[in-house]
Image (tube, rainbow, N blue to C red; front, top):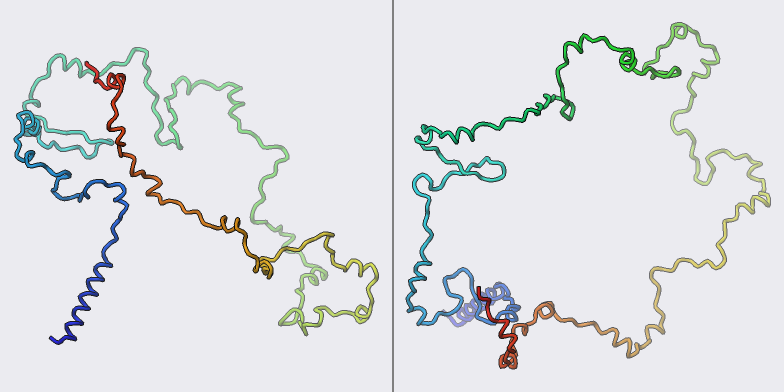
Amino acid sequence: MTAVQETSTNEQATMLQRVYQLASPKTSRSVWLTNYEPKLIWGNQDHMWPLSPTALKASASPRLERLALSKRNFQTGRKICRPEFSYSCGRASLIWEVSPLAMTAESTERVRVLAHPKKPPPEYQKDRPENEFSCGRVSPIWTVADGAKRCPSRDRSDQLARAKTPHQHYTGNKEVETLVPRPAQLAVATPRVEDLARPKSRPAGLFLDPGHPEQSIWKVNGKARTVSATQRLLELSKPKGLADGFVNNREVAWPVSRSARRNQPTERLGQLSIPIIRATMDHVQFDPDAFLVKETAKKARCSQRVEELAQPLVR
């Protein structure tokens, strides 16, 4: 391999290493403000805190061994993993098989008494049957007695059963199709009616000849062209003037004067033009010294009242 090829190979390796470096994600340094211990990597089997050699060699007490035992499973035999009813109303309910002995066993007298349904009181009246095919709501339908069917109606009932009659001046809706009477069908139109019924004859093409743009659409009489307007017409033809003191709308963009462009700002304007520099949210919402205990607080001694309040309750 020549020196030129070796140099090009080194340059390619350096460029590839630089590409890998730029492609790696940027590490967040905001953890440095909140983390005072070694960085933890979740998902591995390492301990959060380093264990001392004495703790690794220590043996558990009988109490710890008893607490480390798993809980006993009381579901044995057919009770293990009972199937759940998937079509329950909102929640699952356990369904298990009944043993053959339970199916052939005889119930006790007490179970038979409890199995009897509760009897309604003597004053209880059964609900009337409801019409399930009613219009939007259920309506009670009951049977009519034979005596009510054969009973003659009263005059008042007949009066209330009559339909309401329309007003005497009421006129019904007119039919959509109008019937022409026979005399009108056989009548002969007069010459005047035939003249009015004849369509107006117009030449083919445009209704009016546009002519030249400077000419009027309608023909103007020669006397009307030479007539002069009266003083009243001239007064009425004048446009309405603006009110006194009227100021027109200001332009959207206006030029800056030369004196304003050459003007130097004052010291006060320079102070007001300096932007406000605010701290980042990491420093505003988090205080790194919040959990630091002062040296004077470590050497302080609590009062007799604080010691008394710190004693646990004896129950």
